Image (tube, rainbow, N blue to C red):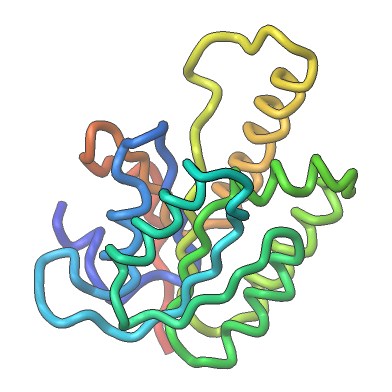
Length: 189
C-alpha cells in the first residue's frame, strides 16, 4: 500500500519500533518526502536527546550527518509541547525524535507525565503543519528487573497508547520494514 506512506503527510504520524528497527530513518524520509527518492523538502527536527556520554554523543552526530542540511534543528529535552508550537512557525513539517528519550528526561526531572502528555496533545491539536513522532516500543522484551525499569516501561506504554490514539497514522517498524497499523482518512482543505 505505497500510497499510505507518501507525502503529503497527515497532521500527526507516530512511528514506533524497537531499537535499531529503522524508525528514525523512515520518519526522516516521511518528513522530507524522500521515501521514494527525490530532493528533500526543508523540515524541522526536534531533538529530545542529551549527549550524556560518548556513546550518545556519537549517536547524535550520526543522526545529524544522515539528515544533512535540509533540516532546522531544535534541541529540547523537556518542554516538547512548547518546542512543537515554536517549530510550527517555520511552516515546515516537524520530526520529533524521540518520545522515549523525552519520557526518560521527564522522569529524571520528576515531572508530571500525564500533564506533559496532555500539553503535547494540545500542541498537536493546534499546529497546522504535519508532525511525525518517533518512539520506542519497549513492551515486547523481557520484564525489567528493577522497579525504575518497570515504571519506565509502563509509562512508555501509556505514552505510546496516548500518542497512537491522537495520531492520524501509526507505523510500526520491524527489521527496517514499515507496517501501517492505523491510517485515519484526513479531510484536506
